[in-house]
Amino acid sequence: MDRRDFLRTLGVAAAVAGTGLGGTPLPGRTKEKDPDPDPGLHLRFLGTGAADWHGPDARGEHRRFSSVLLDGRILIDYTPSNADMLPGGCKPECVFYTHSHGDHYNPRALVELGVPVAYLNWSWFDRARGNFADASAQTGLPAPVLFPLQIADKTVLGDITITALPANHAVNLTEQTMIYLIEKGPVRLLYATDTGGIPALAARLVGIDSHDREARPITGLIMEATMGMGDEGDEDFRLFTHSSVNTVRHTVNMLLKHKRYRPQEGQPVYVTHFARTLQPVQAVLDATLPAPLKAAYDGLEVVFRA
Ligand SMILES: [Zn+2]
Image (cartoon, rainbow, N blue to C red; front, side):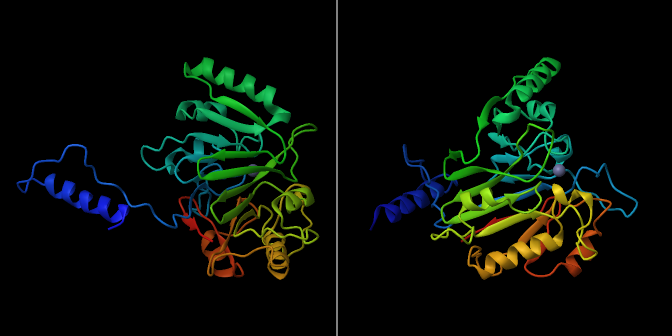
């Protein structure tokens, strides 16, 4: 009997002892949870909308501002609109901000949630420090510890590593917006909102640039499509800072062709950050998005495996 089987036997004994079937609980013998050999990366969409969503629209559709929760403990972006999408009792240990636009960043909401650590690009670190000091003074609650990130910085949080990458998105003349590579075991997920396409430097850092001799393929992709389907031509002025469904489709097709995207079979590419005024309703998206694209929606939970 190997150690794991031995512990499993003890676990059964302890469980039986605890049922009141006549056994006395054995001191020091507790049930050990079997480790999941392939736990995957669990992701919950806390919001899938762009900045023009403020409550349900005339079509009865509603999207909260874009945010995700990783393995129940790490946030990317967070606003008050996402609060009711958190699992009950969830106390995230940190947040990674993409940028300081109000549909991604809300210091007061983070302070009220009690998140103790926030990561953001160094280019707006001083401004964020002031914002969080204000939020702390207004609420009487502690501000999070802030960590400034440079492009290419890797942050290791247990079994998850998050790499800061440049996005193609402007807030002001000095702030660097970021997208993130999330790695857990063999899983390599690129989370790309808000950004107009994938910037070349981000592609290089991830290892999906076709010029790189040693490809490091991603296994998962979440990408924004703020501007709509793109069938009418990507002529919206947001092209400088956002993507369309066609942008995502072209990116995925190119990555597949060059073997830079190697998902587990059947794994969709999730599209998010839908603009209220530019996108059809979820049912139409579900019916019309070309595979492997799939429209995310608020509360959707997915597991990325590789
Ligand atoms: Zn946004």
